[in-house]
Structures are given as C-alpha cells and as structure tokens.
Length: 299
Image 1: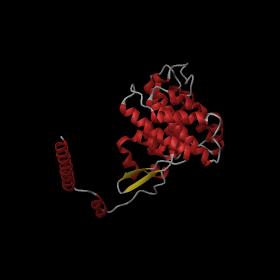
Image 2 (image 1 turned 135 degrees about the vertical axis):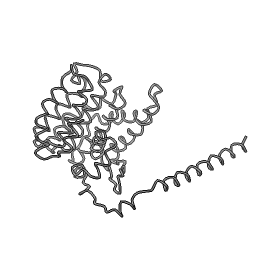
Image 3 (image 1 turned 135 degrees about the horizontal axis):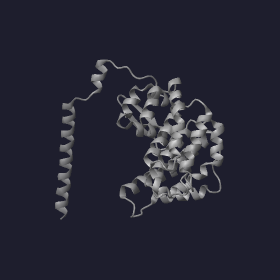
Image 4 (image 1 turned 180 degrees about the vertical axis):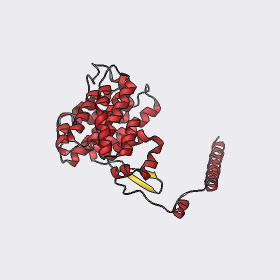
C-alpha cells in the first residue's frame, strides 16, 4: 500500500518510473513465490498493477506485468500447482483486478493478442466458490467485450451462447446456501453484464465529490475508478478533487480553485443539517403512523 501511494504521489514522471523499475523485481518475486503468505502476495499483486499503470514507460514492462498477473489467476493450475481457487480467492481477485486495470492501457496490437488467445481463460472463473471472484471475472469479460468493440474486433465465437447461459444463471441464482446479500449483489451485477454483452447498453453511474461529479460510463472507466477507490479508501474524493495525476487519468482538468465565498456557499451548516434531518424524521413518523392506522382499520 505504501509503495502504491508513493507512486501515486510521484506520478508518471522519471521519479515514479525509477521507483517502479527498482521495486518491480521484488514485487514479482514475492507474488510468484508459492511459499510466501497469501496476504503478502495479494498486496504485491495490487501494487504491481497500480505502479505499472501509473509509472511503466515501456511496453515490455506492461507485457511482463500482464503475464505475471495472468499466471496467478489463470485456471486450472492458477500458479499454485493445482491448488483450489477458493483457498486463494483474495489473491486471485487482486491479480485479476490488476490484470484488467492494465488492459485499459494496452496498445491495440497487444490487446488483439489477448482477445484472440487469452480471454477464454476467464469463463471458468465464473464457477468459482468465491462471490468476489465470480463478479470480478464477469466484469472483466464485459470489459474485454467493450475493448473488442472499440477495436472493431469480433469477440463472438462458438462458446458465446454458452457464456450467456452461464451469465443468465448467475443473474437469477437463488441458492439458499449463499448469503442473501451476496445473492442480491451477484444478481444485480450479472444482470448489467448480460445486458451489456447482449445489447451493448452500459448502466452509467455518477460519482460526486465536492462541487464536481464524474460519470462512469464504461467498464474501463469503472474498473479504473474501483481500483483507485480500493487503494485510497475514504480519501478517494479528496484525491479526485486535488490530485493532478488522478484528475488527468479521469480527464477532469486542473483542480478547481474556489474563493472563500464559493466554499462557504457550497457548505451546509450543522444547524441546516439538523433541520433537514428533523423534518425527514417527522415525515417518516407521520407516514408510519398512517400505515399503522390503515392496518388497524383493516383488522
């Protein structure tokens, strides 16, 4: 995490590139060491993807990082000598998330190679016992379909019909042995994935921060935002407002410069918040009272 934040602060200039180049061998060594702790390998997978995304200057670095990450999550061996995906679910999620992040900056020539030869390794992950890995695999498949459309490549093949069948099952799954929140989240996301693959329609999201907002209108943009959000946590909105690198990545322009009057006008006072919350509470209480009265009349 510290290395990722350091690269984020240094940016894509010579300093950030030097840090990435010097620490990349260590990250790869730990990530590919099956004797290392899963949590350490998971952190290295995230750091390798983020630092490569920010600071890698050569295509060779990008390709080698993609290959290393793919070796972690790819079935059936998953780089673990045949160990089950469930055992290393978080590690595989981090590796797949970093791999999909790097896909968004792949040059067309290498991206075509991935679309032709590598994407079929993803559908088997849809049967993983890990909810997070199933969802991430589905989102990555949607991302690859989107990137193929941008390149005017045809990703359809003889297994596409079977893939859509898999997605429909996941979009309607009601297995009682899974937690209710997991089922609800999985169904919602896979409905969006299936709709995109069948119709090309993406469910746009809006992210608000300060006086600004940002639209997540593609799987590539959503993947990039989710990765940075996971690393920065609650600080994501602050960085979107003030971090020049992040604003450049999301095409937000230079940070806004607001005078004292504009800042004051944009803030809601504590008293105003109290009045709003009180009014909302009273409205809810009245609505519930009316519902109770109606129920009493029926009885």
